[in-house]
Amino acid sequence: MQKKKSLNPIPLSLRDRKRYVVFELLSGKKFSEQETVQAMNKVFLQLFGEIGLAKMNYSTVLFNPRNNKGIVKTNNVSLVEAKSGILFLKGVAGNEVIPRILYVSGTINKAKSKMK
Image 1 (cartoon, rainbow, N blue to C red):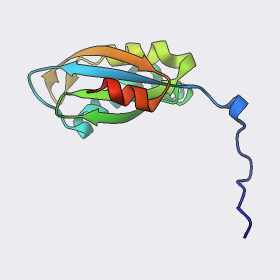
Image 2: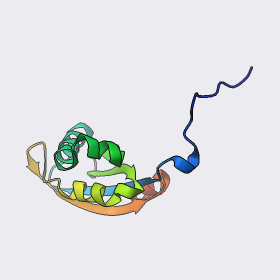
Image 3: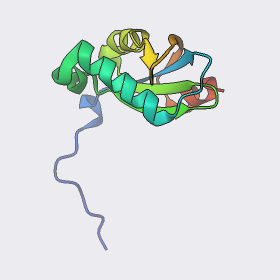
Image 4: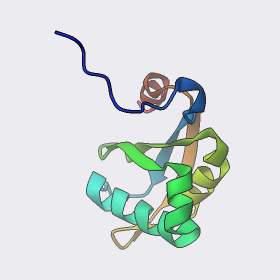
């Protein structure tokens, strides 16, 4: 059997380079992944709009509710916007938080190792 090819794959040279931003939310309360993602999506949408989010290629990859640390994925062109969007987060589920950027990486494995 032949392997099925996709119609028009994007060549590696034209794909965006990814960056993973590891962040921490300082607060007395532990938040669920759903609460955090909703709050972050709301802030990013207010700051950049739908077109800005599409250009950033933003997504929340992982969030650990035990230590309130998470990873956000973006492209390397919009790294500054992604970091500023995280820092504009002031509250999650009605509770005040202080966001802190811990690390920026080009690989998901390195970012996961810095989350511990």
